[in-house]
Image (tube, rainbow, N blue to C red; front, top):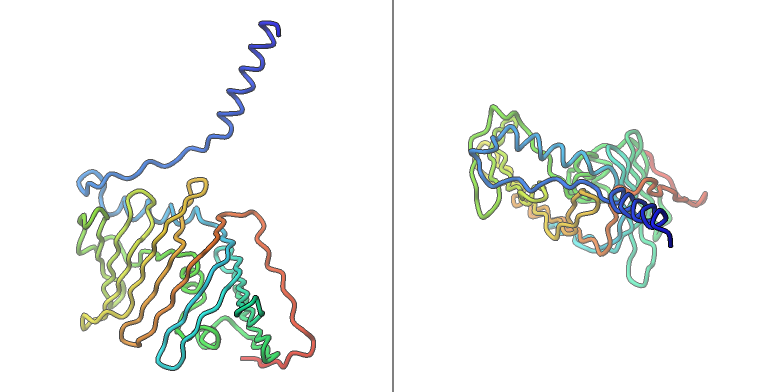
Length: 260
């Protein structure tokens, strides 16, 4: 090998290595004096906006006084408004298909060959998930993101608690609290209290995974203490920001259809 060829090979290798390197955001210092509450909220929101799509499979469990159950699922999610969840029972038996878009709610129960469709309202969603979730809240639940509500001017607490940033602020008539991981900027715990100080919802995000400087949890738990309801989601596999997550599904022409 000539000296010129060696130089060319070395340059190509260096360029290849550099092109494969993606800049990573530095972990935020756990110092409320160095980073103010407004800056932290901005960083958390920016980190959340980098998560554009999710594809994965896992298990979901619902617990409520009326009924409880669990199922395996395959999921495709694209922010801000598209979600496809295929639910399966034991031995891979198809149980249901849930699809949400900005204008459409659709749930097909394959066991009963029954289709429910309509606008994506909380009442329609409750036909599948026994919770009063809005469409945005369903997408947030499955992506493990808990947006910081309220204005930074309403911050009541800003401190460090158990190696996490702790924020408390007024959100409407309620009080919202967030515990934020400084490395991933993921809200690891969220708690909302009403005007009487009662906890109306708590949420936890664990088993954080990172792909190309985008972070998301594999384990999500959302609890409504006053209603004795809980939603638990666990991802056995998770892919973040896939360019073309599949939203293909089919419904038999013989399905019994209800419009809501």
